Length: 120
Ligand code: FAD
Image (cartoon, rainbow, N blue to C red; front, side, top):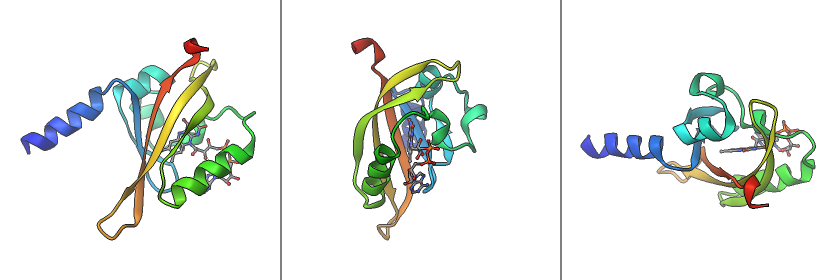
C-alpha cells in the first residue's frame, strides 16, 4: 500500500507528460506535467481522445504507422506536431507503449511526451 501510493505520486509528479488511455486512446489519467505541456487539466482531458492534441495537418500515414506498431504490442517513438489548448503548435517527442494484461492482451496504453520545440 505504501509502495502503491508512492508509485501513484511518482507518476503524478514525474517531469514528463504522462497519460494513460484505454485501447482506443480515450484518456483515463493525466499527470501534472501533461497539464503543463498541453494546457489541459485532468477534468478537461479525461474522457476525451488523445486526438484532441492532433494538429490536423499531420499526414494520416504517420498515425497509421503509430497504430500499426502499438497494436502489434510494440513501443512507438516519434515526433508529432501537437496543438496546445491555447492553439499554439508544439513539437512533441512522444513514446507510446502498450500495457499488457496477465493474458498478454493490450488493455491500455501509456503515452509519454516532452515539448522539444525550443530545441529546433
Ligand atoms: P484520425 O483520422 O482519427 O486517425 C488517423 C489514422 O490513425 C486512422 O486512419 C487510423 O489508421 C489510425 N487510428 C486512429 N485511431 C485509431 C484507433 N483507435 N485504433 C486504430 N487505429 C486508429 N496523437 C497526437 O496527435 N498527439 C499525441 O500526443 C498523441 N498521444 C497519444 C498517446 C497515446 C497513449 C495513444 C494511444 C495515442 C496518442 N495519439 C496522439 C494518437 C491519437 O489517438 C490519434 O490516433 C491521432 O491524434 C490521430 O487522430 P486524428 O483525429 O487526427 O486522425
